[in-house]
Image 1 (cartoon, helix red, strand yellow):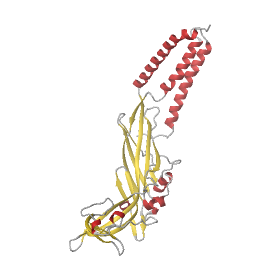
Image 2 (tube, one colour):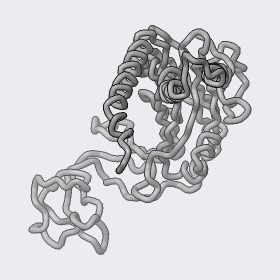
Image 3 (cartoon, one colour):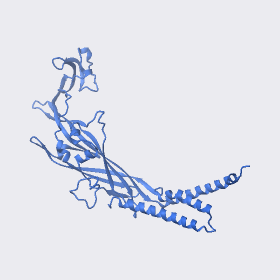
Length: 359
């Protein structure tokens, strides 16, 4: 795995292409200026036209063999926070997922439940006036359980359909503001990204061999550092960490590999980008629930339901590998030769027409 200056390979490739093009152009100018008997003005013009048309094909990427990237992701978060008398470490506020990282910013207990029959939460379809409004065995998408067919009092003024569920049913409360772990913006995450180009049997890692383990990613000063401060990620995505931590959200960490794998022009390094994926105007945020179960002394099962808001970081990897292919170059040269052969035949056919003088 080799890592070089991020622009060195591109500069060498660009310099080579420009130099080759200028050299051939100067050769055409020199030959045409000589005006030798073996090469007339018409042939010079055709030669110049041939070069100006074919040089992009010869020097461009059309002779390069391409391959799409295969990728794997591993993440590691560091940081400790405290709220009141509780300490939060990585085991408590991170939830590892495939190619993603969930950072919990708000967690609170919504209820301590037991299973049984209780009045449903008063959303419009659950509000009732009599048992006729409730259908036994019916389940609504917004309901918390299965209706028993009875209409009962939810509170002193409102009646709702009774449901068989974990109760009391969850109330629709807003999350605490400010977020519990609002200071987690100073946490850091190390992203390890292995990529592989199967066609070229080439593998590379996004961690440089001479990595300074105390570095932090910066687009200008440390563009190859794989250690990111969470607050900086949201800043690059043009988001406010403290605001987003309240109801959560989804952030994309994009890693783009554009690799030239030729020995002389080697250049293969990651470029990082950041953006928000969830729509702030249409149901923004990221949340989920989980429960802890235990049994009471009488043997009845009980659970404590937790509602969690957080920021999910999705790591998205894109990439293309390129390598010179002599067969592709031969194909392009053959195509150009046949193309200019047809052009010559076409002008031979129309030349008599063009030379007819009007009467």
